[in-house]
Length: 362
Image 1 (cartoon, rainbow, N blue to C red):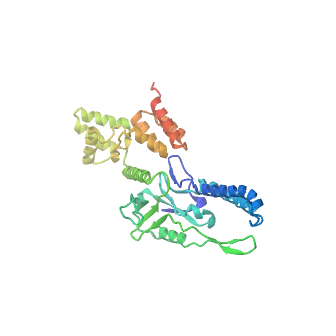
Image 2: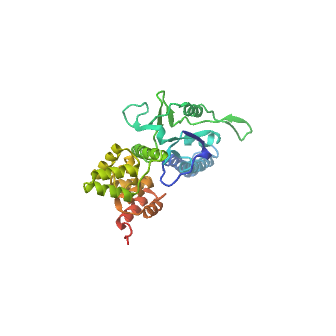
Image 3: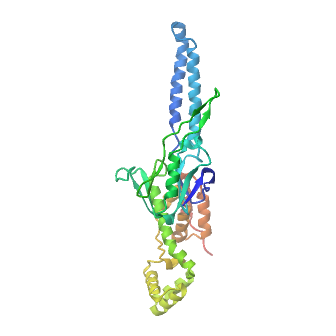
């Protein structure tokens, strides 16, 4: 678990999915009220000549109110679309990044404070949608169950964020007055060690749970292969795997078991399990990581389009290679073309790539 100041938060990489607050539309209210003041200003001129009891400079006062409200609306509009501040979480290859400082208080507190944490996938037990109190009602929060027992640093940083006071600000008359903070704290750590994150961002909570569970599954699948690499266990080439499968299907089971044991550097019992999985199709013969139990299932076209909409490029590239015959270079080129496109444009670009298909093999 790592903690960051705002300026130290890692930059977004290709394949990361960022969850942002929708652009604020409160500025529309400013313009609406400004329009009312403008309408009143238009009507005050003729009325001032007919009704002497109107206060002096009434029209000028209404015009000034309209201008100030318009300026406030413009300021609110620009603040509402600032992508550097107006986000909550990011699903990355390495873990789940959560910014627990509210975007509403970003400019009111010190930039040297710790405002975000990244939790690696091997530190997360599970994620699920839940209500604000952990109930099974309307899902409004993302609940993260943490494996680590040392939660003191996270609890301390969250408590510090909740206890911060707005610094005093210098006013135009020369004095100083205490600033104000918006009481908005999107993340909280329960006494049971569950991290609950208020979800008022886009994409949806359902999509966030799907992405997190997919990353957790990938991390769990990669763990045996990483352990095998750490202990020196070999991962054979696809050609060796195909040879083992061919021997097993031709009836040379003993030879296939011995070849698998030598290629993977595993026991005979483990080699027998691997060969049975390869022959029955539970393990993909074309996948070099078959020894780790890596299962490869075709990704439906509809799910591919959804992945393009949320920017999960690594999953798209793997599906293009395994299910659609693209070479790794072609799949990477497609992912690069989809990177940072709006959801609709990303879907259209992916549909065009799927319809065109991979380049003919010579």
